[in-house]
Image (cartoon, rainbow, N blue to C red; front, side):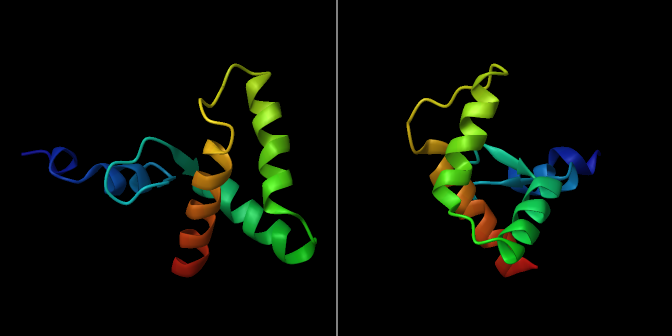
Length: 88
């Protein structure tokens, strides 16, 4: 039996290099490389996480990735970044 079908969605996402924004039913996942970059960037620069997420949301929307709620990406990214930093 294939092991990949028995693993939970978050476990499957992590195996694919993505970090789930929710530990149970993730609707969004962030690249582990992006989280590593953001964690490093935030250590070396005094960035505002909300402003950075707004800029990234605008960047992504121009490429067809639109989020339904205004703060949806900021809240989910902030949670994922925090949990990533705790785990690291």
